[in-house]
Amino acid sequence: MTEQSDRKERPGSGPSAPQRRPFLYVVVCASGIAGGVGELIAAAQEQGWDVGVVATPQGLGFIDADAVVARTGYPIRSAWRAPGDPRPLPPADAIAVAPATFNTINKWAAGISDTLALGILCEAYGAGVPTAVLPCLNAAQAAHPAYRRSVDALRDMGVLFSAFVPGGAGAAGRFRWTEALELLGRE
Image (tube, rainbow, N blue to C red; front, side, top):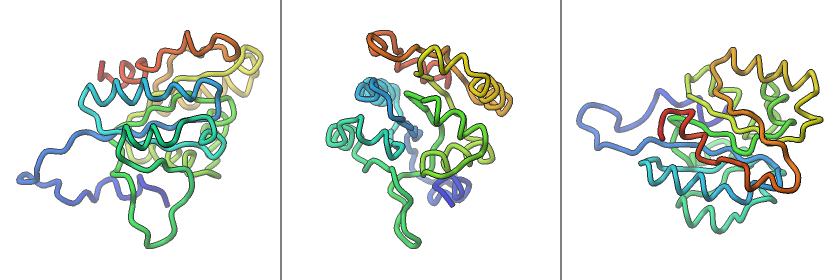
């Protein structure tokens, strides 16, 4: 069971509860451009979001964890929590998967939930959490039939996609981190 399972049981959500900022999960995958995730975090915070980062186990090695924690005020999630441990992040109001890799997109579409990040993404559909994806993969991966089927399946589930950005040298300069917020309707 992941963080999304308790989405409808928010304490303090009644009419007299103090107003809280919407919460955005940023799911970060293992990509050479993942280190730029701070751009998305900063833009989301400027637009009124609180942000928590969930990294794939391999993605964790591609980001400056200390800088992300300092910027968000929340620990980066990458592994399942133990039963009874407190939830370190509030439930997500929306999710941005950026950068999204070939591996993550295909596993997610197939319903594979072998990491915390994939578990959250798989449950987001059933919880009704709006999700935007910024793919970053190479042209050969994008040409693979499994990728096209996966994108189609996720779009059929209501997942919002930007066009893929070819990976490799120079991808960081072309990656539009804030497009995730545009897709979610929070420009």
